[in-house]
Image (cartoon, rainbow, N blue to C red; front, side, top):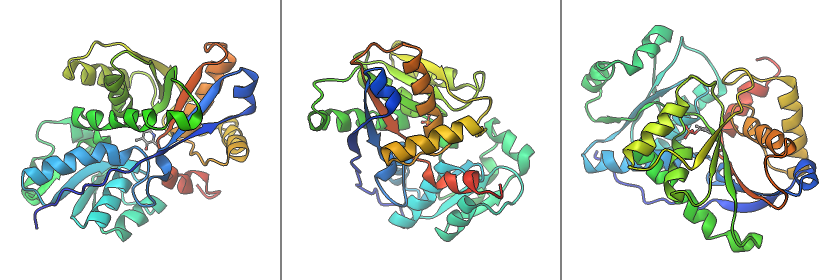
Length: 309
Ligand SMILES: *Cc1c(COP(=O)(O)O)cnc(C)c1O
C-alpha cells in the first residue's frame, strides 16, 4: 500500500520559564514545549521525519526503515508515526538483542526490528551498507541515523514561525537567542537557516566534541547555501553521550520541581544545566531573552532513571 502523506503539523506551546538562577541573573527564559506535541511522537523528531515521509510517499514507497540504539528517540518517534499513520516501519538496532522500555514500545507499536551487533552497526557509514536492506525491503525508504539531513533541517526551520506566532503571549517584543540540545545538530542547523543571522542559536552538544556535530552543522549550512555563522557550540555532554552524573540528576530534579516541566538526562537536562552555567558565568547580560527548546526524549527516562540500570 503506497504511503499517504500525513498532513499533521503539530503546534508547540511557548511558555515562560523561571528558575532561581535565571531570576538572580535577570535573564528571561521561555520554553518551546515540543515534548508535549503528542503522546506517541514527542519532541523534535516528527519535524525531522515529516519531510522524509513526504519524499517517500512521492517516490511511491510504502514505509520507512532507519536505525538507532536501544533507547533511540528517533526510532521511537518513527515507530509512533508508523502506528499513527498506518505504514510499515523497520528499525535496525545497535548491539545485541536487549529488552529496554524503548525496545518494548517499538515492538508494541509494530516496528520490525533487526539487531546488527556493534560491528554491524559501525558499518552504517559504508557505501554498501543499505544494499542488502534495500533488497530485503524494496518498498521502504531509508532515513539516515537520527534523521540527519538538509530536508530535516529545513523542516525544523518551521519552529521559528511557531515561536514568532506566540511571542506576544509572553509579552516579549523579540528574543535574543535560541538554546537547545544538539545531537546530529540538524535541529540547530534548521534554526540557524531560519534565522539567517537575525538571532544567534546556541547548540548545547550532548555528544563529545570530535564526534562530528560541528562538521555536520557546517555541512548542512553549506548545503543550504548559508554562511557558516549565526551559532555557537556549547559543550554540554559532561564527559560522554548519555553519561549521567549525580550533579546532573540533582539539578534536573530541582529544575523539574520548580518549573513543573519534565526533562531527561541525555539531552534536555544537560542543555539546561549548560545554560545555567553560561548564565552564571555572566555571558548573557541582564534582560537577555532566551528561548529554550524542549526537544523531548522523555520516553528515554525510564531506562536511565530506573534504579536497576
Ligand atoms: C534527537 C534529540 C536531540 C538532538 O537533535 P538533533 O537534531 O539530532 O541535533 C535533542 N534532544 C532530544 C530529546 C532528542 O531526542
